Length: 132
Image 1: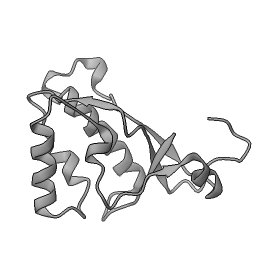
Image 2 (image 1 turned 60 degrees about the vertical axis):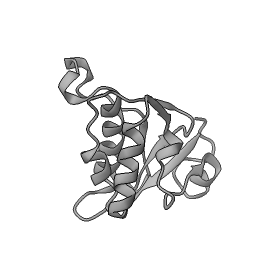
Image 3 (image 1 turned 90 degrees about the vertical axis):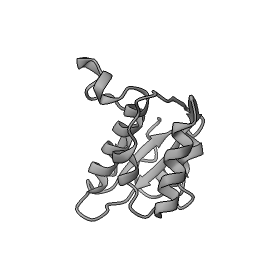
Image 4 (image 1 turned 30 degrees about the horizontal axis):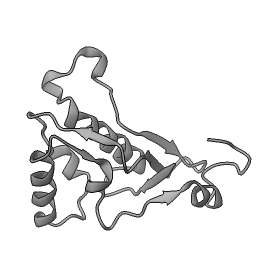
């Protein structure tokens, strides 16, 4: 399993950002305007909480294929990455909108570090004897 530790930004906590990112990834496939009631809290990836209660991480699969709905709105997703330049935002949006589907790993910002399970265990995310 692969993880992305989500840092707080501005007034957004690590938890808020992680949950919003996975929710907005879901909205690429099923935009709010076309969601059924049962989809109103849909997400793509799970969120893992560090035992410190402050840090959160997305449990991701870089090879996971995300289908793109023609009505997908990416504004909220790209707003979760304030460290992206305007050019990077436009490039990201353009890439997604020109695809019918894409692997999640294709949109992970170059400044983002993917962590493996061993790293997470070594850094206190999981008890060492816990199986995932």
